[in-house]
Length: 106
Image (cartoon, rainbow, N blue to C red; front, side, top):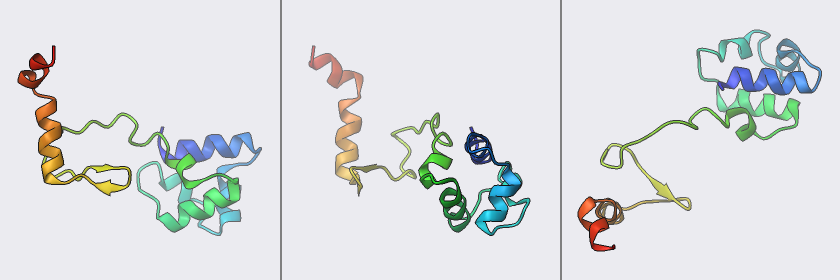
């Protein structure tokens, strides 16, 4: 579900329209509608979340839910418990997932 759909659904649960939410958040009346195709600013998200009495994460929850990333992609920066995964740790993780390592563990 995209951000616009999340906002619309939450607004509906509060008995409000998207335009009303935008107006109360102090952003352009049609701003939220544009979120179907454009990414909103963090500031706008915070304002809308405040009006709807939800966390920003509630508005962005499902955006990357089904995104997959190849662990061999060195352009991706992984984190664990809020800290970057080092190159050495990544090498170890990749080794753990190789068929040779798995067969030795059986």
